[in-house]
Image 1 (tube, rainbow, N blue to C red):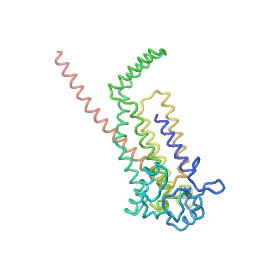
Image 2: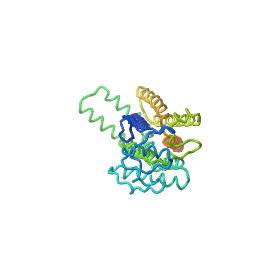
Image 3: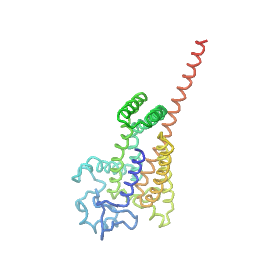
Image 4: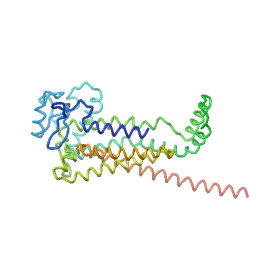
Amino acid sequence: MKIKKIALVTISILLLTTGCGNKTYLKEDKNIVTFEETGQSLQNNILCKPREQKLYEVYEKYNDQLSIKLEDLPSCETFKPSDIKYKSLWESIFVKPLAYIILKLGLLIKNFGVSVMLIGIGIRLILLPFSKKTMDQSENMKKAAPEIQKIEKKYANRTDSDAMMIKSQETMLIYKKYKINPVSGCLLAFIQLPLFFAFLQAINRVPAIFEDSLLGMKLGMTPWVGISQGKYIYILLIILIVGTTYFSFKNSMKNQNVNSAIESQMRFTLIFMIVMISIASFSLPTAIALYWVVTNGFVVLQNFIFKKINEKKTDLIKPVKSKDKKENKKRGK
């Protein structure tokens, strides 16, 4: 399940950042229109007017392709979710409210880059209980692993329906014993993927975000364009993207209790994902890259803290057990 989720996220990032298979971008002769100064792909369903004159002129050139004409769009400073009547329920529930929060927080703290990062952390905090539940399930799976392996060996040469039914019943009893819910492992992915895609859409559709800067990096600029202009801070950004992605994926895979064959497959998947994300990171707008780095960094820290908490719980339980054994021996004597 984890491998499928990681693959889905990676492929989606590639599609969202390159525009492949997507009809939400401005086009000229079937090619996606990009803003030359930053390298960003321009969407045709923006939520508010660009503030920079050059960017405004590009959108003005393709005004006939916009879902809503430039003159009918609100300014980004005054944008409200109710301003634009797009038909999609997805936009109304997720995209526009997120865009509004990013804009309002960015205007309050005077920087949209910091706003994107803070809201990314906020989303991870909201998902924290689900992340904790997922990690607890992984720990319980580790404890149950020896008993599950015994059942696998017991029915290794049995393929009849009666044996399979009994095997399933015995496995479910072990799940119940260790409080394992197989469905809960999918819960986090079910919740976070829509939020992740909505966040990326919200960023892509607000020109004011791309027009802002943070630490000398323009939020709409891709690392490829930044490096080609001699701004080598974008190399550091790529390193951070790859590094945080590696450790967040690696920690997630460590929590899985699998045999050596599957472990080898997961290791290959990890390498594949890192290579793909490394390539994709060159075309990620800085605003999205910052979100990706901060949220992955949060996941790494979160997993480290959860691991330490679980280790402390284990250390507290062990002395109690050993003490009970000593007392039982004395009583036996």
